[in-house]
Image (cartoon, rainbow, N blue to C red; front, top):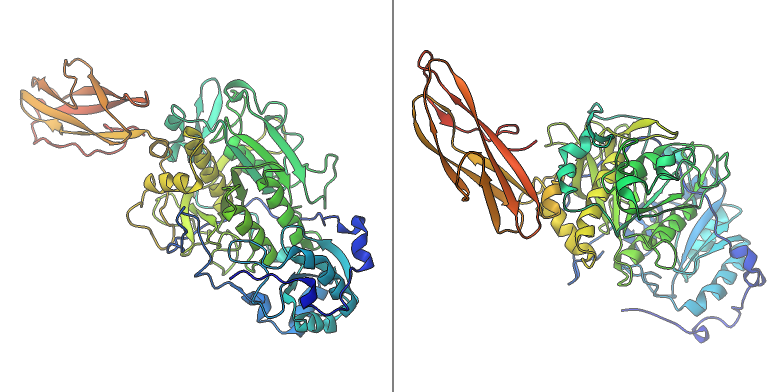
Length: 591
């Protein structure tokens, strides 16, 4: 039940603190945290409790308690102060009604009467002699600078305090470090000259472009910013076949930035993520998955591990990316994480996930490269976030440095080429970070097929097109997504002998998976218009190869693909039994 109280229910001594009358003190702290060129993995999880519209609820989630995340709530005041003092002596304090369990519900909605937020903040300042740094206008929490362990104890003892957590974090808590995982970069040149990374080829992105390009969808990348020296993500972003779209930039952190502009990426991680997800198709560099999608790059991490980072930049970066009054991203990519959660950041994600006016799809990295740690990291471990991990070349297990666990929804192949910091530079990104970019791009392709789709519908289409759609795995979730199937395309395979040892007539057929239909079939050198055809082979002294060919068209979408199948006709000098077609890639099934 939601709780709200009027001022009359609090002590009469509560009044508006003088500091709260100075709006200049309400400015948002702008510092996000660091990250490096490594991506995080994901693992597969049981289904979370869901509302009727498919949105995840936190009803069964035990991470958040009445006092915040378990890690901080269970820590002694002495230990919590030691952690806070080692950084910059700042804390985030959540407010609630006295007697209530919490001030924000499981869907990110404030339970405390907003008219009480400022008076209670003034009471906090007076009670512990704190310095006010930030007051949130979406949820009842504030950031304070406090003077000692006694302040932690005093805050925790107040009846209207829901939790006390560090407002800053040690960069060493960031579970990302420089690494490449399980793959070497390769690809193919696509006319008029773009390099299509092998990661896109493995996920069947190139044929999916016949049906979807990402147009009309916006991808928000909350990361280390966007390089001002990479024209592919600046002046060339809407060139070539990517015309008609737009890109924007913003920042909530400028630490370590040699700017201007403040949103410039000095680390490269954010530039690589945005490029892999949405670089232009203009014949000049590496093409991204959703090359016609709009984008916004927000610098909320400095990526240099210099000095404490602040959760405030994380919250604000997510808010700016998702809020309809700001950048209104359909998809928010978060290729970073921590082993310890943060209640205020979680509440922000919950709000934009569950608010009916936003319908935001959050995609997070499960974690990469952390020694002796394999659990899915925060915020990818939240039910509201689609956790993604890197995939080993086999396609059946996570990459060697990638995290995994029951929260992972999808996995993607790693170490793909992408845009670098500078003009004409091609770089690489691997692990679960790169995997989030792939999945974000594929989600944009799917969503662009029908802009009226809900987030739940997009997710279901991704699941239906995944390798393990009927058998979710414990480490990689539904596994790799076939982008072609996800956007409504189809794949097909031949049935019939791939080797014959005598003259005669043989029947061949092609089976279609996916698509909408009805389908048409045009066989080469055969009048059949059905999914099957008969071919006559005449034996000769020496072996020879006959290639069968059929073009299949889905009349509902116009998508068309040609399939070829090699049949070896054994000569009279060699003989040998015929056998069924193996159906492997390259003989009847397009690669």
